[in-house]
Length: 126
Image (cartoon, rainbow, N blue to C red; front, side, top):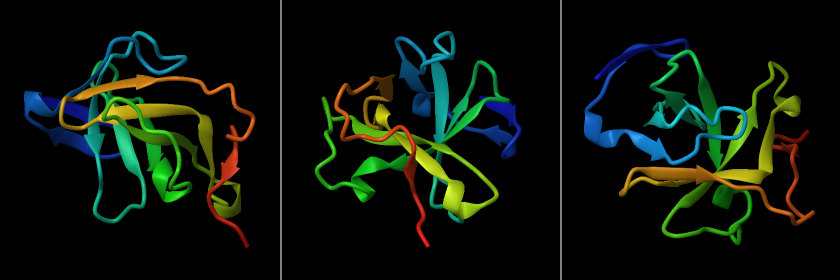
């Protein structure tokens, strides 16, 4: 399969690595198929839509921030990153994680009611 992405240009990948959501990420519920990309030169993972290749989400593994962050059903938790040219303004949404099972190629997003998880966690500090 091939798609033309904004971030990576044209990429080719086998069908058997496609990550599938039953219901797409919040605000993008109709997008249900993604390719999970980890560039060698980046601290971020990328979840690039196959249905609309111009849409991609930067992700960061939440266990790297909080080793006790909840995991569920063999799915690893990732926070969606809000990128900014100023590194001090790069934030991660820890309250609405995307859970990905890379073996089963499934994913879902949920919202935690707990106030101890920030919507705008600063990834970098001075």
